[in-house]
Structure formats: structure tokens, C-alpha cells
Image 1 (cartoon, rainbow, N blue to C red):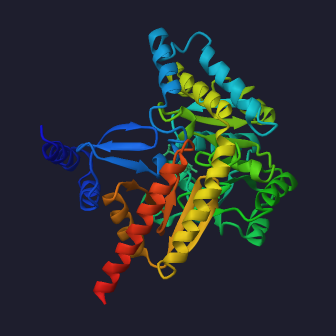
Image 2 (tube, rainbow, N blue to C red; image 1 turned 120 degrees about the vertical axis):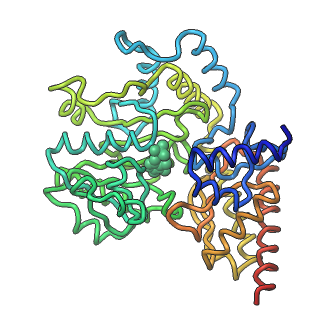
Image 3 (cartoon, rainbow, N blue to C red; image 1 turned 90 degrees about the vertical axis):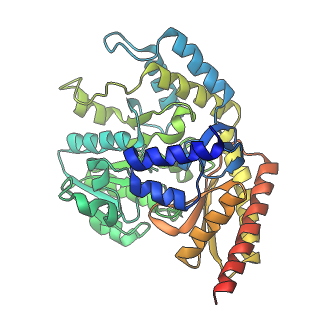
Length: 418
Ligand SMILES: *Cc1c(COP(=O)(O)O)cnc(C)c1O
């Protein structure tokens, strides 16, 4: 098949059997078919290479097809892939030990699942079960997943409204507002669920002291603090965990995206001994998952944690993130009418535009030139840059040049319109 035929066939299959409305959007945006990926590069059906500066919304912290992680999964595949579910699973045990060793103190136990939403579902269920309360405080613009429970706490009406009534008890406060949070948490509150940096909301960093305030409010009212680190976890922000930005220790913490090393899907919910006792002492099978913690996924995650530590990727995210941020700010200075702000921490950066349409145009121009990024689901004015933490300086410079050229072309297009 020619590249054009491959593209046409996949678009047709999407249209006939996956999601015709999404297919139309993607086709309109000019997206190709992904065939291979290596390191920071995506390769499409025409053999064209793209710098991946979206990184699968945080999945590819270790880049694509990291050889050490691929090798660990291959070796595990030769032994056994999925758990028989009756005997002890040694990979699951080892991963749990390793995760709790690097997690904020107090998080001693781990429940494994297969995705971010599942990790959030477990955290919400544990919080309700452990406190006997049902009120959950979340924030506007937050993203915690799209399964019914997680969706109930996702701070965007557009995704919730068509499916109401959802899980009762969820309430939303503006992200970063100390007063609203203080008023919301009370003796009925089971948990506050919070992203240390809102990803889909448009890359909003919690203002200094916000996470500490939430910790104090939860302590005062006997509520639990859930840190949703599905995107911020494992070095992305320049710290191992987003909570480490303030040294805050949550009662429950969710991980997924980067945890599988960009090779396998896996989710994890970490919790304290107090929570585990409440949930599991009465019924050791109170919450389970057939595929959660399977040997293949755990082998990938164990190898990923080894690479994270051996290559000091959190420090690297901090250093190269600073560099990327200042280079993006230089591009902003050259296009002051288009770009209003560059923000974020580590390699979780957002560029905000003056108008929604600019984001769309810029993405199209960037893709055309071989640079992949995307706007945030909840905020089309913001483009996110979340490249692999293994990003090389040379690739960074290449991306900056493309971004600058793309914005220049956007200016030309807009000028032609008036
Ligand atoms: C992506 C994400 C989720 C949902 O993860 P899925 O694997 O897509 O279900 C939940 N919380 C945060 C913070 C996320 O970024």
C-alpha cells in the first residue's frame, strides 16, 4: 500500500468503526498515521519524523521505546505475561516496595490498576470508605478522568453535564483560591482531590502554600488529601512528585501515565496504613482489578523507576525545563501580540495565546513543520509542551526554531485576514 492508501484506509476505518466525529476533526487538522516511535521522535506513514513535544500528555517521560524498559518487558514476556491471580506476584511486590520507598513519607501501600481514571476511582472509593463521608472537594478546570466516579470530580461541565446525575457529593472551588478552599472543607468532607499542577486545565501551577493549606484543612477536619499525580508524578515537574514542590504528604496519591515507562499501561493508588486498615482489614478483597499489577506492566514500571533514578531524570527535567521555559519566553518576546504567557514547572510547560484561534493555527503550522504539541483539553488557548525528560538540547533548539517560524506564519495569516 502507498502512504496515501494507508492513511485513507485508517481514516475510513475510524469513520466506519471507531468515531466518525473524531475522525473528521483529526483529518481536518491534517494528522497522519503513527507507525513507529523512538526517543523523542514520532514517525508517520510517510516516514516523516516529528519531534514529540506532547509526550502522550505525560506518558513518554522516558521517550518512546526506551531500550532498557523494552528489554525488561521482553524478558518478563518470556517468563509470564499475566498473573495467575492465585499465587503471590513477585513483580507486583517489588514494584510496590520501590514506589513506597520514593513516595512522600506515610504512603506505605499500593493498589495497582491499568489507567489514570482507575487509579482515581480507587482513591475516591478508599476516601469514602475510610472516612464514612461522601463530600469530595475538587477544583474548577481539573482533570481526573472520564469514568463515572473520576468524571464526577473532573472540573469541566462540558464533560459532566450529559451524564448527570453522577456520584453525589462532589463540589468544585476555583483552583488556587485559598478562601474558597477554606470555606469548602468541613466535617462532612471525605477528601480534597488536587493536581499539584493542573494539566488539562491549562498548565496552572498551584500558588505557593496552596497544597500546604489543603493538608492543614484536611487534618483539621478529618478529611483525606488525594494528590492526583497521574501527570505530575515521576519527575515531570523537576521533582519526583508534584507534592514535593511544597514537601506535602498526601493520604492518597495516584500515578499512571509515565509509570509504565511509555511501554505498558499501568495505574497505581498509594495510601497510608490508616486508610488500608479501614478498607482491607474487614475484607481483603474490598477493591481488586484482574489486570492491575500484571507482571508485564510491573516489569516495565520497575525498569522505568530504575532509569528515572540512574539518569537523574527529575533533575534533568528541572534543568532542561528552565532552559525550555526561557527559550519559550524569548519567542514570546518576538510575538508579543500572539503570546500572553509562558508558565509551568520542569517539563510541564504551557504557552497561552491571546485568542483561541491562534492556538489552533499554531498547532497546524507546527505539525506541518515537524513539531507535535497539543492544546489542553479544558483550555484551547493554551498549548502544552511536555517533551520526554530525556530531551536533548539540540532537539530543544530545533523545536524553538519551528515554534518561532510557526508563529511568524500565523501572524502572516492573521494579517492577510484584515
Ligand atoms: C490523564 C489524567 C487522568 C486520567 O488518566 P487516564 O489514563 O486517561 O484514565 C487523571 N488525572 C490526571 C491528572 C490526568 O492527567
